[in-house]
Length: 171
Image (cartoon, rainbow, N blue to C red; front, side, top):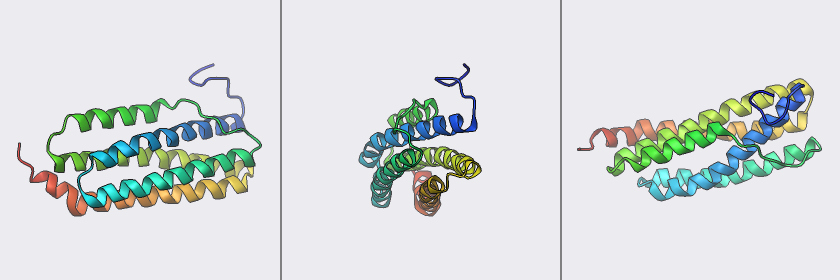
């Protein structure tokens, strides 16, 4: 049986499992983002997280459309990777007293999430193309574009403000 909850014998099985994995991940992210919004101190970081929360809700809706297009029920399977990334983010954030350092840490944690999502969506798109699921490709590509955009915005925020403020923090 291996790492998965059931035997995966075909590319379609693997695709469906990974789709269920990212569905779980997106739902966990909608639970984590409000906490990140609450902890963030830089107004542009709070706003960015609020925007991404709304985007993530739309991404979940697109995933549900993808399941429908495949004739499948939207279902999640536990994703230990996203659980670990979120757990680590919570632990790190809990250990930081200086608000400017905390903002830098929140950005880094958010980027870890984005990078995970980018890899998952890129793989899902490649598989969907291979199997001729054109409607699903379109849905997943819209989400991948949003994830890449969010990552770029986080990089810009980190490099233009947050990292420099964190560097000035006193112990």
